[in-house]
Length: 367
Image (cartoon, rainbow, N blue to C red):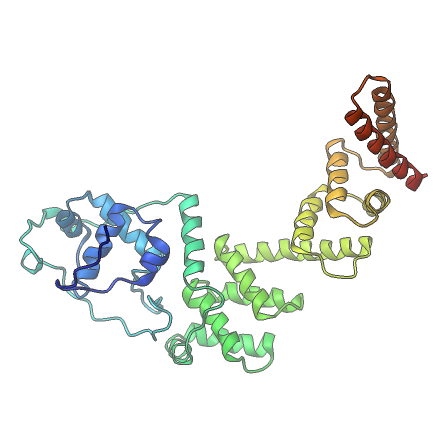
């Protein structure tokens, strides 16, 4: 059986993002509250009025409002700064405040409880939920999207802070008038992600100093900071220190391993794990040499297994590492000799022979 919507009734609009991205994440009371507000977009309701009409606890109504605000479907009016509901539409000035709705204004005759003036209870979300909401917000308006020229112009003209941010970016970091793509990135960070101007300037400074001021890199780092809740100057300075140390250590590894190209994402993940281990240059070179001897190349996965083993055994000296490796080889030889004496099937004999050939090749390499 097939179904279709009967449009004989009055219809109203629902943001497409609600169905495309949010419907799987939203709970029943989230959807009820949103549909109710969308049905009467020109009215203002208190939490208690919404809860009373939908016959749900006030806590659920407040939670729903918080949810839709966090994913940018509902916008919160604030002085001096306003986030857009739809980025392609230029922001309009906030409307004059309206009086709270009374019982007579309600679409149906519903009793209005005396507690309607009570402030809405604050709803707390878990760190996991906050992380999901941040990822969702990034997916709703991603790095490939663009604000219109008119939107960018309107936002810059209406925000002295954003105007100052762009002026400093042009004079200090880009050293020329920025183009639409660069302006789009700054507006995206400031207005959509809600990053303070001070944080964006710290990010620009880091990218400029590391000669990575390309838009793709800048946007990617901004998205990472947003996901990690790096939204204060103190948190940004701390993150820059970590990134600078990692950038320096990555160059250090590239020099030791004699890499011609920049490390891949997978290799960077290994380097990030090695940095806190604190191995000396001679130990890193020895691990590199062992990798080349065993695999014929600088194999990050192979090197990682060696470094993890040394770290677990607290090996910090080259002689200790060499002794440990010699013991390992002797253990392999001993195990293979022992297994040769045991009765085996033809298949096991073939596998054993193959293992011994590999071991002989390895011993030829290191001797």
